[in-house]
Length: 110
Image 1 (spheres, rainbow, N blue to C red):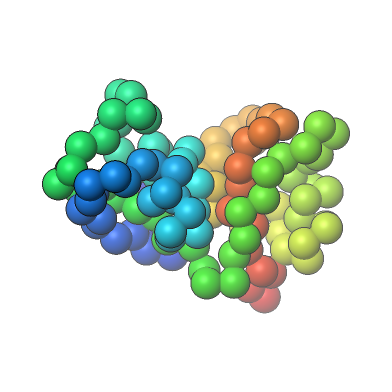
Image 2: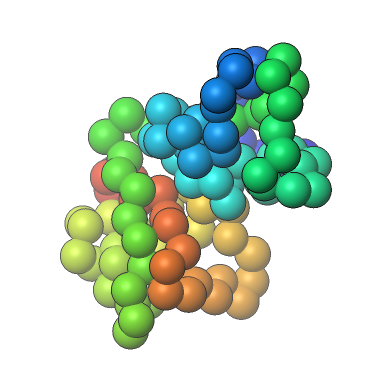
């Protein structure tokens, strides 16, 4: 399991839930949830299944990467640090991001 920088919670899947809905409910991304769980098919979660959800600080937002974005310019735009983007999105070297990817963007936490 990955280190949880702000903590995790265990969520019991309810009827009608999807990973999209769970990610939105807890202000995180589907990708982050997948990094903490062994879910072979993101469209096949079942009622009663327990999912570990990595938490983000309450002021965090979910940002969708656009063409030309870099971790540096996203951090600059939102007044945070590249290290925060790496940490709260559990990114591994070489820290590649791609258009359409969703990222948790936190405050600077200075």
